[in-house]
Image 1 (cartoon, rainbow, N blue to C red):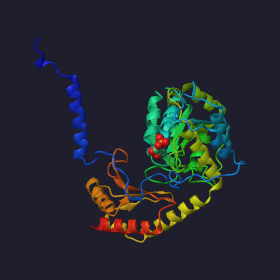
Image 2: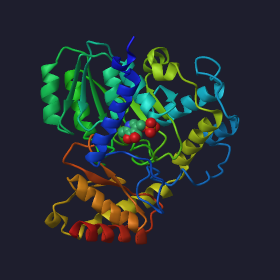
Image 3: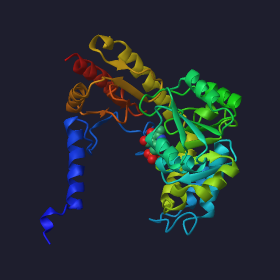
Amino acid sequence: MDTSLTPNPVHTLKQQWQHRLDLREQAQQKRCLRTPLAIDFVSNDYLGWACSSPPIYSNDNVFFMLAQQFSDAHGATGSRLLSGQSTTISALESAIAQFHQTEAALIFNSGFDANLGVLSSIGDRHTVFLYDELCHASLIDGMRLSMSRAVYKFRHSDCTHLAQLLAQYTGKNIVIVLESVYSMDGDVAPLAEIVALAQTYGALIVIDEAHATGIIGTHGEGLTQALELQHDVAVRIHTFGKGMGCHGAVVVGSQVLIDLLINFARPFIYTTALPPWSYATIAQAYARLQTDMHARAQLQERITYFTQLVAQYPWYKYRVQWLESNTPIQGLVIGDVTRTHEVVKQLHAAQLDVRPIFAPTVPAGTERLRICLHAFNTYDEMRLLSRTLWEAVRK
Ligand SMILES: Cc1ncc(COP(=O)(O)O)c(C=O)c1O
């Protein structure tokens, strides 16, 4: 048999992989892994808790006490539904539920897993999902996995558009999906208006509090509690890899929601639980939320200072635009891939770690710099950043 004419599927597939990468390279949008530079304006460690040792609290702090009870074993040995369960994890979840002023809580291995788990299991193919167009990839993938045939986006934070869609699907089971602080634009959702719409149309709300956890609210409880809307939002997802400085995520809501997730959320069921020391870091971070008001105040001072600093320059003259944001996430939209790379090169030459964001992470034409401010950034660093940016965009 002449095998030379038989196509080699492995070879063909590999060629396709290379072709897809080449296309990304040609568009100057190929992702690659880079180690951090000296001055951090990129990490989500907004409060600086990821690298600083947690304080010692007295034993009347329930989270601190729980943190001491986890072993420092390397592994969980199984899924929560098998050998990965412990009474201490359940006690931690009860304390977290109380902190978030709701009935129950369930810890997931990451925010991505939590979003996949929630959205793939709370509905069925008849459920209508209405989501903000800037929602995170994990929320979108979760809705895809739900098998729903009715997944529609509304224009970013546009309540008029949302109301139109709600009216269109009246009588169906509707889920509204949004974030409290948008991960790429840094703006805050109009949650009170969305809650009012949800009540009018009998819709249920899922909110991803990833970038609000630790940041918004007197104790960093998130946007929902800051607005006292905890009884009006059915599902909240808090992630721990950002302001909390550790890893994992929690879904908080009613007991029936948590029971549903334990039974149907595949990213919870079919995975090894977090290692015990990881739960201990989560408990430590909650202890810190309750007691450390200083880091949040310091962060807010930096946000105020930085936004005033950049407001002094007429950026519009050079066709770039700062996104309006009062959160640690600041965005300078450049709107052109090559120019964005050039600006970033100059920042990196000054050891300023800011990363460019391209499509498909953000819509094409809104290529930008995503700048994260931290409680630990110095005023000198912020001045250096604004000056270097201004010089770079004027070139
Ligand atoms: C809005 C939002 N939700 C969820 C996630 C995922 O969280 P994690 O990093 O814990 O998987 C992210 C992280 O990028 C995010 O920005």
